[in-house]
Amino acid sequence: MFKPNVGGVDRILRFIVGAVLIALPFAMPDLEYWANPVFYYGALAVGAVLMLTALVRFCPVYLPIGLNTGSK
Image 1 (cartoon, rainbow, N blue to C red):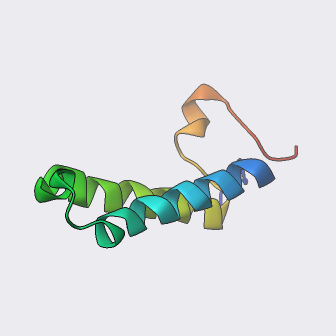
Image 2 (cartoon, helix red, strand yellow; image 1 turned 180 degrees about the horizontal axis):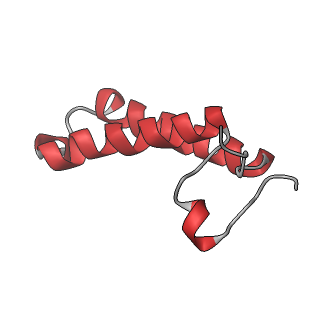
């Protein structure tokens, strides 16, 4: 459907940062940041999007700016 535009290093970083963002609210529930639903659900949503884009190797944000970190 779409041509992959996320490369190897970009994929690894996206996956790691996404996993950390998803794990943080559960690993440190006592932080005052997680009391705010915007931070709590925002971290989960951004983490999920980062992991999804790493898995499918496609980032729609890269299209308008013409960025491609994958091999051509």
